[in-house]
Amino acid sequence: MLRMPGDEWQKFANLRLLFGTMFGTPGKNMLFMGTRPGYRLGVPEKGRYRRLLDSDDVSFGGSGYSEQGDVSSEPVACHGKGESIAMDLGPLSISFWLCESA
Image 1 (cartoon, one colour):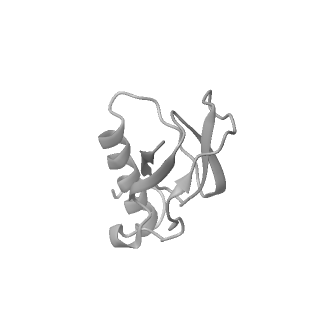
Image 2 (image 1 turned 90 degrees about the vertical axis):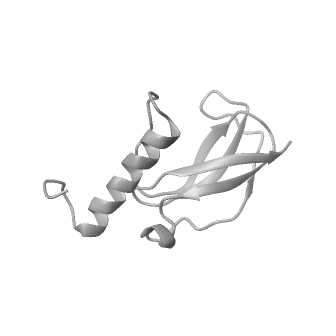
């Protein structure tokens, strides 16, 4: 980590993001971005989505920026899907979501 750019918080945030990406999507391409208030993500099915894990949570050493509850999908097409959810994404973080109801 000595060669990584940024301060200590940024280095560990990047490390959490890397591990989360490797764990959640082995062999898949990912979309990387900074803080995004009101980001919209296409989802495969209509329903209520619960955040399972967020690397920006303060218990993981994150900033706590993206602490929000469950979100419901909306009939707004995005990323090639008919439904989407709107969320706030913390800086240098990864989130995992689960559809709980249709």
